[in-house]
Image (cartoon, rainbow, N blue to C red):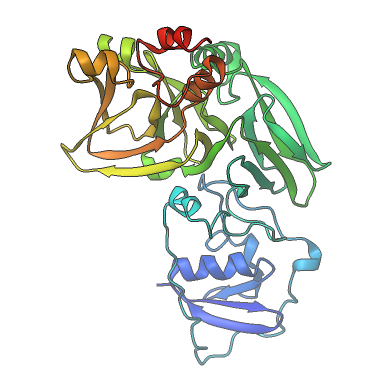
Length: 371
């Protein structure tokens, strides 16, 4: 086991052997120098492969610290006696989306600081009408739906691309654009890149009242199934694809048709859902009945089908439509309290609260009511 010594502002720490402790130290002290047995002198930590920080792809190193951030190089090698190892802080890798549902926690670790951090830093503002703010390091990029931008800083470069900028070549871009068209998205996405050695900021606004959630796709085997039009923004490389409903009945009466939105990749993705959000964990074989429009997202392990909504009387006069969705575990589902179709239908028809949007008597009731 290799023992590492570190020095920041001539204060030595070590020996350190635990990888997570070393990563935490280097992240908090990017200008540190390091030394281990066999090295003839102290070396800048960001230049030593064994301890330097890499981004989430496991290949790309973080940009080097500026000259002003570098600590002075120690005059002598570490003393022979072992310096007490820094206490290891237990880091909780909790679900990012769960943290956002907590009103006291709606930002990523590192947001608002000057240091380069791993992955995109973000913060979500607002309650009913939310917007998302991303912090980008130099060379870091994010993609978003065309027209979603709210504001950006001067050195964030904006470039509109065909497709989702995740495919190579003309054919790949055409296929990407075709998938986006089938999921009711724009043929184009906008890529935002910070171009200078400082923090850049870009913000995106939600299209209607609801909740913005952040998902780390690595925690869901690189794939998440969502309703159409739910994608708001994400790290560069996140792919927006299509998920076909293979069952005819599900496609015809499932509320979303044959096609749902499939988000794939290994980075952060930000999804907008209508109204308030309810997250439910389904055990293997456990089944949940849901209004078809209230299904916002689910993991790929959940089996999705539709079922007739009771008897003829319930179907005609219950106001809940002819079918509802059946979700069978194992997996996780996210439900939304205000589907956009319901919001738009109420605004257009002017229905009273006593007439459900799924009732076949809705239009007749409107005529009787003088509308």
